[in-house]
Image 1 (spheres, rainbow, N blue to C red):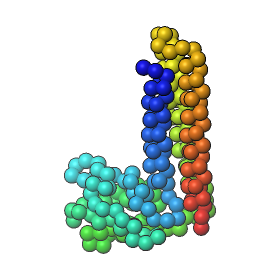
Image 2: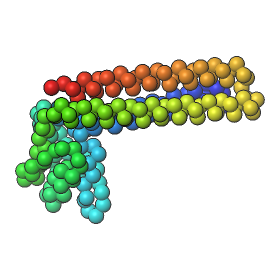
Image 3: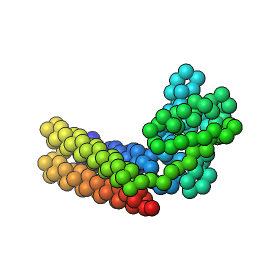
Image 4: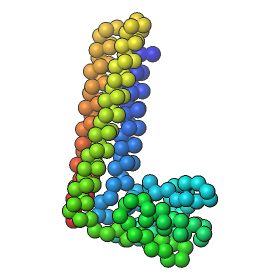
Length: 186
């Protein structure tokens, strides 16, 4: 294994970390309706907790309304309860086999809470990136110790790892900035 292989594997993990961060941040409420809002909702269906996507279709009806089309009529009440209990500040209303979820406008205080939550997610992701960097550096040290790479390759690898972390941290900051704009938009 070469230093380049270690860096490549580390970069792949960093990309996955960024994807995970983007998925997490998508579930943070903005003033607009988005299906990602309900991604974390789990419905008590058939004796187990199932993601909402496995119980019905979620769609955007308009800028402030989501529509959940439940596949099994017997699951409408459980789905409605799951959305209400998900602590998202949403009040679903059942209409036959569908559930209408109106997205109320955010208060200034609530917007600030969501910005803080977004920043917390970004910090968690940055910590994950730094941990991946530490793994890369540890692997490079081990390769040098085992005489598989030279000291120069190790130092180049460390520089590459640092550059990757800076690149992905900047990407996180860009994503957070965009999300904060969306949240604070009235």
